[in-house]
Length: 388
Image 1 (cartoon, rainbow, N blue to C red):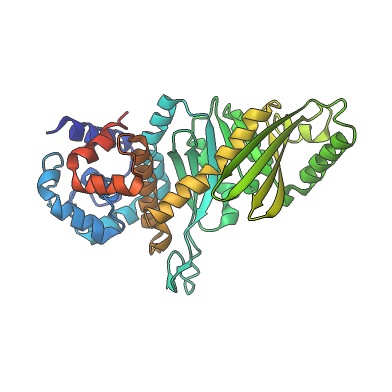
Image 2 (tube, one colour):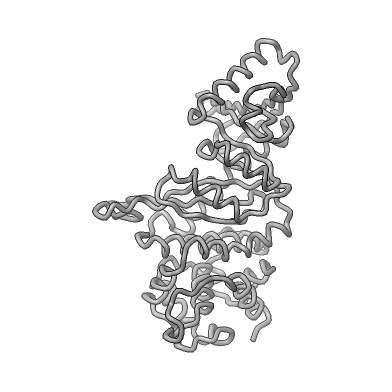
């Protein structure tokens, strides 16, 4: 057996050692670890649905038999769909992302962005992730993403965007936060979430909007008082960046203000320390637009660091979500089996993370997936580079 293939199977067994197999013991033709290995390998090789995964396995049968047991031969696409649909999505994701969490610890990444991605309810007139007659809402996935390394660290599936408030604490429990900064959009700006992050020895940067009207009013008032007094008596710092490209010029100004120790909001929010004000001025085709966003943070007022953390947060939209939709076609997948859809989505995120760690191929994710499909040695290299 090839050493890389052996290491891949051993790593997968280590990840899924505690995953409960819901099938009837003694009545299964296929080993669970074989099914999971084929699914991951197939997704890396551009498979997008269950028939694609079966086709990959049939065409690579001889190669797969060199390191997998396959006592019942190659499973059918219905078997892949049924087994992934039976696995508990929370336990599956928790086991799967042990892989990338180990990689994250090794690379020393610091900023973790948490954001939700909704599976489109319709695309091209076809139902995707909801079923109106049975009241099935569109699938919503909340993901933790390490911005520096491009690794997905965890995933929780829920039925509505409003459920992110309850999903985020569950996701945080899966993460090792000491020394990390967690960035979340306004949906996650909750006292309990801020306290949990600090209890897990992490720092937070939370976007502030109308969902916390009292806090937003007080922070806006603090900003106005600082501007009117030229920040007299307030610790204040500013950092500016200028970027030009794609026909536009963008200037970002990050102002940080130390919230006074006697401010009433500091008693309500765990270790609240800094108000962050991000102002963006864009020039596109002769038009100028301005946008200002407020954030709160447990970090001391370090303008350059906080500006970078906020900027990195949007990488989950521009890098991960975009790649999943464009390269993996996630926005057009039919996903009405909740556990199966969430579990296959988790495999896509792991595959994306593994592909991003491979640096010898510089022609993009699509080319890397094609290379995996054409060359088993390159496919094993992608997996070997990410072993823990």
